[in-house]
Image 1 (cartoon, rainbow, N blue to C red):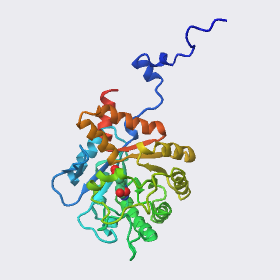
Image 2 (cartoon, rainbow, N blue to C red; image 1 turned 120 degrees about the vertical axis):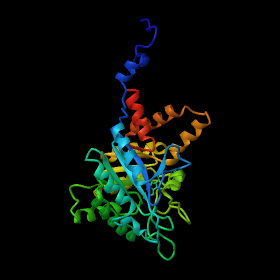
Image 3 (spheres, rainbow, N blue to C red; image 1 turned 180 degrees about the horizontal axis):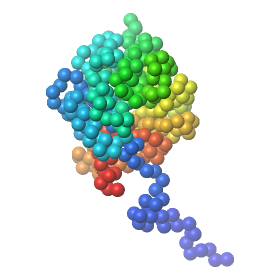
Image 4 (cartoon, rainbow, N blue to C red; image 1 turned 135 degrees about the vertical axis):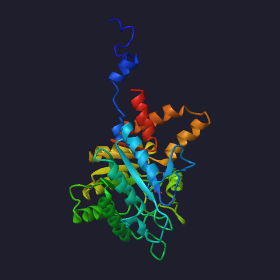
Length: 332
Ligand code: PBG
């Protein structure tokens, strides 16, 4: 028998035209799956650009409100809010001040929006502590895990009262999800406020630009005693399973593009809604290369965000959320 002149399978048949490619495309990146991280700073009268993150600013209360209206109009699904307070102290007490900058922002945004805009509050202390660590310190300089959890719980309840739909503990303390769930339930938020748990957050070099924006660089040491070792994927999955057992509603892997294996494995192991955080350094890298003409920045950014969805993330948290949502709308 004569072999066929060419293989019967011709995968390129499905790559022939834009319409055929669209028909068989596996991964859709839609604007309702995008989450925009935003910074609101106390005591400024003009928004302040963050040099290492083109297009990102520290917002005033009023520029924040405008930005969230624009993001909603573009179809972005949620915002993740970080407060940058004027006053910092050793324990980060502004984090649970009912009148703190983040709480004020949540109230204003809840006032501007019905349930159609999901408000997520960062629940951590590093923006609020004078030393920049994610929890209070013991005498020897180590972070006091359980005291941190108590503080997170107070902050989460205060954020829930101010209108947060989800609270997002990002400090990587052991037991933080259980601490938050217990406090939220005790204060009447059992059915209304969920937890987006940073389950697998790595001690990454890619957070540098964020620390400028949130003014939270550790004043000594680093975060390697609480954030995960970048070499460990099994541990990332174990942490995710622990957070599921503690009552997490949504899981979060961070960074995203350099941890796609963890995204896939956490999704497969838990089947919970999963967010992946395309972090400040990942965003800055694309912009820096594009500014030199070394990359087509628009295509590269869209490709990276799509790859995060493809790996299994339901939600993509990115500083490019507004840009991406508008691009999806205009190029649909
Ligand atoms: C800390 C926190 C960090 C980020 C989000 N929350 C920084 C850190 O752990 O040092 C980083 C986000 C980014 O780089 O975009 N609670």
